[in-house]
Length: 181
Image 1 (tube, rainbow, N blue to C red):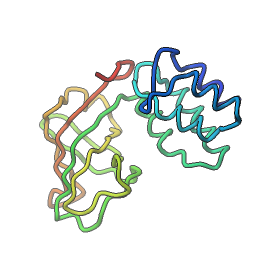
Image 2 (image 1 turned 120 degrees about the vertical axis):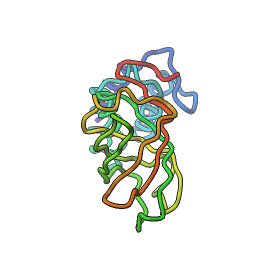
Image 3 (image 1 turned 180 degrees about the horizontal axis):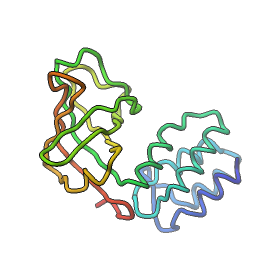
């Protein structure tokens, strides 16, 4: 398992910092102290999309599995590395009768003009989105080519039948191999 983390670390550029300001050197130090779960957390917190390959996220997923830690987020990020990062501000309609769990279980239909389609959903920063609530979500389209023309400010409607169960405003799209602004 340390080999998995060391291989992932080798993919991190030396000059980048993660969301808490840690560098590759900090991760290396945690590995030397056998703090594998902390090293995994640090590796998972690195931002940027351009250098994070599907291989990087597969290594973190495998390490999390070996450590018996949650791994769904790393799998999700691996999909984003292949398809791009797509975020939206979602307001869940009162017509939806139950909250949405955070971990991308749903695959509702999203429509916006000529774009959209079926996409999985991940609620950021909360365990679930309550009925009538609002949150930033990540969308993982099943047909990403139909989503690439969408831009910040575009509005998507969420359909799980009738009536509409949510409305989302696109806040960010970062294509594969691009860096987040």
